[in-house]
Amino acid sequence: MQVDIETLNPILTESANEADVLNGIFSTLIKVNDEMEFEPDLLVQLPEVSEDGLEYRFELRDDVLFHDGENLTAEDVYFTYQMKVAENNAVPSRMMWDKIKEFTVTDPYSFTITLYEPDVTWLEYWAYADASIVPKHLVEEEFLANGEELSKGGDFSRNPIGSGPYELVEWESSDYILLQAFEDYYRGRPEISQVVFKIVPDANTLLAQFETGEIDIYDRAQPGQYEALVSLQENGQAIEVYQYPGFVYMHADFNLRRDKFQDKEVRQALNYAFPQEEFIDTVLGGVGTPAYSDTPPVSWAYNPDVRQYGYNPQKAEELLEEAGWVRGDDGVREKNGERLAFTITTIAGNPAYASYQEIAKQEWEAIGAEVELESFDGPMFGDALTSMNFDVIVFAWSSGFDPDSTPIWHSTQIPDEYGTGQNYAGYKNDRVDELLEAGLKISDRQERIEIYHEVQEILAEELPSLFVYFMNSVVAVPDNLENFRPNPTQANNTWNMYEWKWN
Image (cartoon, rainbow, N blue to C red; front, side):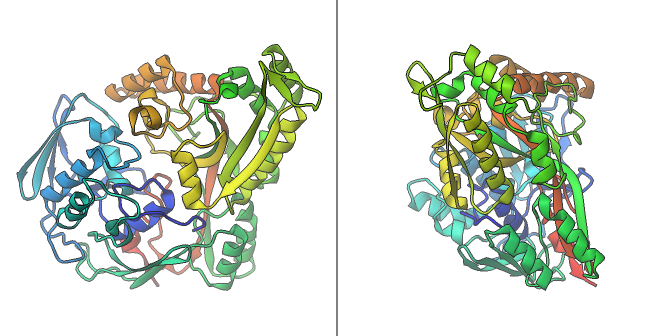
């Protein structure tokens, strides 16, 4: 993995790289498999749902042990819920948890959850690593000792105990994480005894290490490396190379708290001035699909008819002139005494992000902006994002296979106003709020399609974010690794690592 991780506490995690590791250490109530279907994990079977869609009845397996030998029970599930809603815990999003009206433990291995209102997407959230079940008997002590608060620097974040197929053995920050097979895993001891997650910030170094066999699995390879990986295979290296569409999109979020970005014409002008298709063809080697909103073509809710801008610097300049942004003596545009000057922030070590920065700077300065660039390692980037200390920030979102995007675009998910959520851009639109709320309550797919089509149309028009491209995920593995089944959802490719084995 390229980006270092901050925490291995599921209560606080929000990183895809952390999820890769958490899938090994912890378990979830359900899983989303590679066919995008639910299947039970800690549960005996998928939950029973009442006719009105409000009540979910769960039955846990009774043979699940945490790595310290203690049984996992319904009390641990209830405690996990309590930690997600605890006021002092810096939980990235409480949205799914705040929907719970009542949580009733009926016996050691059964519980019932009642929602305030129906939500057809709610169950999916239980399938991902940030909903992993934590041990009450260990985490509660730390929570109380720290003034009813968990932190990414806390003991459980660094020394997690889960019920998953692997136990944490060693974690050297910025270097590696070593896991070993858990002998008493409820599905049976994994065939592969040890798994090492290496942290290598540079993508070219990762490719070289994969070629020499220093690493076995190269996940999230850069799109531009796809041809190189195929070439290795064609030249006799015993590997399998996968390229498949998914739910991850690269984007550049505006900080809408900045006066200059509250002007829609500025956002649209910057979109016109970026050569999106050329970027995909040259930087990514064509391995990607242009994005015009936040929903990918693989989704049943994809709207192919949203506004598309195309590369048109002249149109960009016209928009800025019409909006009152006039070039000064040094060529930088100004309006009401404010210069069109800003910084683009991204994660260090990612060639695609770095290329986007460089191209955007060149193109945007040509239309009268003044652009600075900065890049940070994983933790520092995470701090910039979550503290909303950025002007324009470039990264990628991994969404669920349901098209609901409430955590990102609903106004109640603006962290600095509501204390939780991932609407870091600070986007507010009453109609989008209304549509997102309606989309959660309706089960008819055609009606939901109409709702999410309109959401996409509004986002494409208002551009709280510049949508760059949907990633075709690229991963390469040895051809003698059995049961590696790439998963396009937030479950990630380690979702079934307990099944992996060498043949």
